[in-house]
Image (tube, rainbow, N blue to C red; front, top):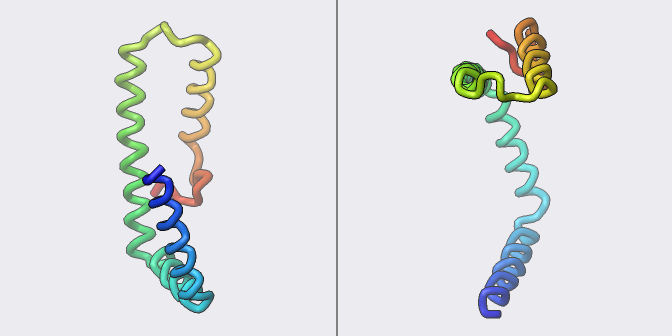
Length: 100
């Protein structure tokens, strides 16, 4: 019971402090976040991270495929093949990043 009371007291305090900050502070935070997200250095770093993640995922997929072998149902294997084919020729993915 004590933990619940502490939780709700913290929730109420956070709400009160958040509403006192007001809309102006919210807009300032939103503008700062947007400027950081649109920074070319941040975008390039995010794309490089996404590309590196794709490479590691491909290596992991290869090692798992070797270990699992023919134990995967045909429906799953067909889905993986179609995803590979779709990803091989795609210039942009669903997240709006390029494969450059």
